[in-house]
Amino acid sequence: MPRGAIIGGRDTDGSQIFVGRAAHDGDLIPAKVIPSKQVAYIPLNGAEIAKHNFDVLCGSDVKWKKERNGKIPKGAYPGGTTRAGEVLYIGRVDHNMSQTVGKVHPSHGCLYIPYGGKEMPFKDYEVLTGN
View 1 (tube, rainbow, N blue to C red):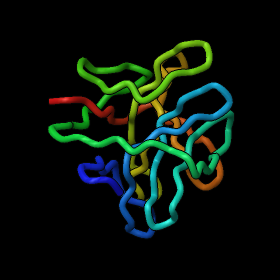
View 2 (view 1 turned 90 degrees about the vertical axis):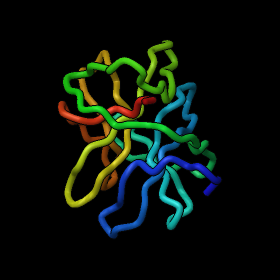
View 3 (view 1 turned 135 degrees about the vertical axis):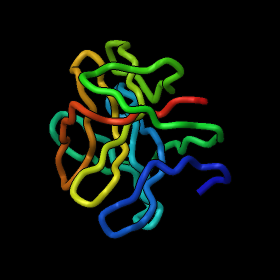
View 4 (view 1 turned 30 degrees about the vertical axis):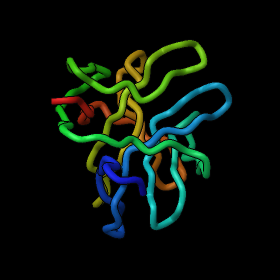
């Protein structure tokens, strides 16, 4: 992992999850990066999709803020865009003994995470912001 990579959470096995993004069919989607598996996963169209080419977000002075129902707090980091031009944001949620990074899709009113081979929606989540 690059120096300054932002930790987004932890996998069910306790390994760290980092914040990333990956391109897929014209979309640029926030991703969970799992170095121990050498892969990033994106949530899309009901599935968890593995990506081997991805970016890792690096920086400091970040904070996770609680939100819900597709709302985005001031200072949120944009994590990608859809083909149609909608901005996607970086979010995370606690689920099944993990803390997993995903995409906040404002027009859908939720956070989606890639988990267990599926894209899973959540109405309550945290959003990555600058301090």
